[in-house]
Length: 253
Image (cartoon, rainbow, N blue to C red; front, side, top):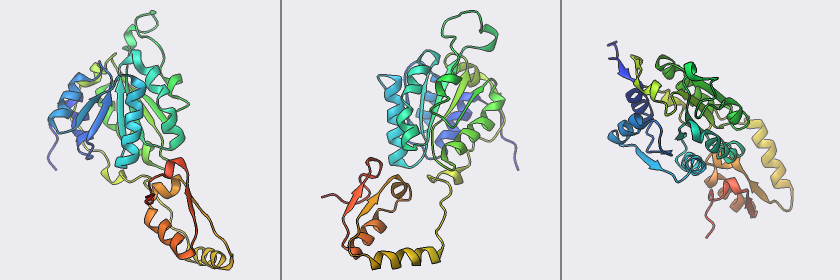
C-alpha cells in the first residue's frame, strides 16, 4: 500500500469530510478558514450563519434530512453560543459534530482573551467531547467523534481545536489517509431486527382487537419505516399520529 503524502490539518480535515459525501457545513466567522476554503474547492458548500446557535440548528436540520452527520463550527469566543444550539440535537437524537477553537495551552491561565473552558459548556449536550492539541491527534479523534455521533443513540459530539480559530491544528502536518469510516454513515449504525416469533405474536394481537391506532415516533423516522407504517395502517384501517420528530414519514395531503 502506498504511503499517504503528508498534508496540513486543513487539507486532511477537508478531504476527510468531503469524502463522506457531505454537501454543506455551517459556521460563523472567524474559524478554520483554510479548511473552509479547501472544502469549497472540493465541492462542499460552507454556509455562513448569522449566529453560532443558528449554525448548530442548520447542522441539525441537515443531519436529519441528509441522514448523515451535520458539521457546525465557531471560534473560541462563540463556543458557548454554539453549545446552546445543540440542545435540540441532543433531545432529537441528531448526529451533529461541533468544532470550536480554544486558547493555546501555553497562553492559558493568564486571564487572556477568549480563555474559557469549553468542556463544561458541551458536557450536557454531547456524548463525546475532546480537545485536539496536535494535528497528529486529529485523525483518531475525528474518527472517534464520527463513530460516537452515529453509534447506539445518535447524538452530538464536539472537538475543541488548538488555536482560537483552530489554526494550530490546520497548520500542523499529518500523513494519515484522509478517510473516515464510511460504513458508519447510516443513522443509526446498527438496527436490531425483531425475532420472527415476536413479529408473529404482535401480528396476532393486532388482528384480535377491534380498534387500532398507530403512533409513530422518532424510531420509525430513523428506520425510514414510513412506507411500512402506511401499509400497516391501511391493512388495519388504523389512524396514524406522529410525533414531531416523525412528521413527514407518511404523506399528509
